[in-house]
Amino acid sequence: MKTHVIVSFIILMMIAIASLHTFIELWYFISNSTIRIAPAISVSAGEIISIELPEIRKYDRIYLVVDGRVNVDEINVTPVNVKQLPLRVETSEHDVFPTLISEKRYMLIAHEDFEKICLQLRLQPLTPFVIKDIEGLQRFHILSECSSRMMCVELSPIRFNSNNYTQIAFIYPFRQIIEPNFKIGGVIELVRGRVDYINIIVMTEKEWYAYKVVDVFTPPGTVISYDIDAYSIDLSGRSGEFLGENLIAIAIGVGISNVLYEKYSSPVIGIGELRIQNGDYTLRVEPAVQNSFTFNPEVYVLRKFQPSSSYLVSIISLTVLIVSLALFTARVARGGLD
Image 1 (cartoon, one colour):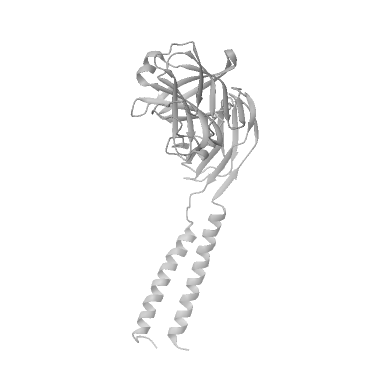
Image 2 (tube, one colour):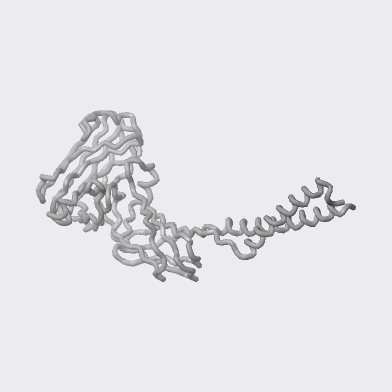
């Protein structure tokens, strides 16, 4: 057997061994790259709940997904060297509505290795609505039910958009095709302070249709009853355009400017019963507040790929062997070796 055949065989065997080792390392990482924890926890609003997580390595991501109606008031981690990334996915007109309405998501990153960490959450009461920021960022505090069977919420803007406004929405998911007899009604009270506007928003897969029911001149203590049908005129002057569209949700949008907030501080609004009629379907959404409920979070630990020293040796060896084989083959082709 010629020398070049033996040498080629040895190099190919070494390449196969290095490739196998590399594949095993990658397969092990892929099979263990995500850990999912989904506890069911009985909670009371205001108390701190703890979720223990397994070993965390430096640069691992912790991804928290909760039901959209759950209001996470505070997130802490012990030990403390795990930081929340600026990823707090919220709703806007350009989002994919169903996913972002049904879920709230948070991501954190570890800056050190930990044998065990504890995710600590403080929750507000559960409501029928998904509460999400549309513009800027507001801190809200659910005050439970107030007079006239209303759910009261105190709003405190903490970051204004570039237009100097914030808008927060109280969203009730509702999926149907809009019929000609479509109608929504309800009651809202401006309990304290002032807001620039409160809009009733019809969210469809194509567009948002907003109808103003409270403006900047509405004084505190005012109770507003509203009724909106398929032919009401929205803020853009449209009437009946959403007929036949796929309805996704009904929302109550509250806007506050920085000028108004500096003058009147934190407003309190009361949300009463929401009535929805569409085709043969009629629904009444009571503004009930649950201070005790079952919390079903999903926590994902997303491992960052950090190659071991043996993996790096395998990659370097594989590269060297492939280059060596190519050079050796080229030399044989030139007749430099028997």
